[in-house]
Length: 245
Image (tube, rainbow, N blue to C red; front, side, top):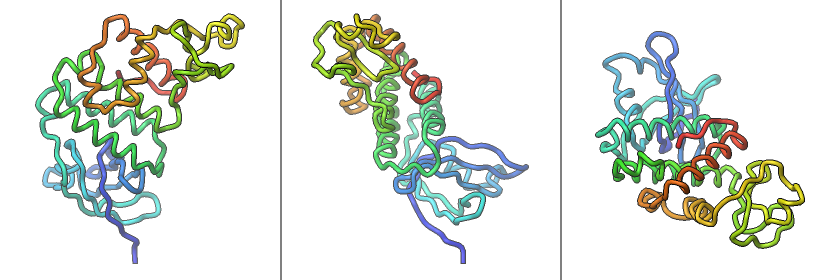
């Protein structure tokens, strides 16, 4: 008899296989990232497609298989329909879901990543267009995800000598955080660049504060540009994928 289980999932991405089937990549609350084969889900009459292709949390019934686990049923338990109200929100949802799919390997189990994705959907559903246009919400999502995946930056102590760093600090992507002036002058990291106290505070806030607060954060143009540059370099260096913000 085939092994079966039920779990709560948030859909990430889909890909078509054969003429009428799809494979859905999802993140579950207790099994991590899963690849689920959905037979016939490309057909117009398929009920699975309607459930799996809109933002939400689903209760799914899964049958274990050799090559793929098979999706046997799905029912929505939480919906975020307001994400579909605008192109910007829909794009932000799809971008974050695809980012997690690329960043997290199959079967990586982390309840906090599931919770982060659900928190992001909630904040995105409630957010204003301005929170999306300048990247505030996506910044918060990315830095919380970096931290959950083991790439949290050091923002208070020098990554070389471990002394507390004051206002005059540099930031090194490759070494994972701030450098004091002495270590920078000694050539501890060739990629070290000056980081303002404001940018350091923003990074700390994005990691620690709830996502809904990130969406309301004011970013001066210079701080926003610095945050975007650091986020992009951090993602490319540590996850080897392009940032989404």
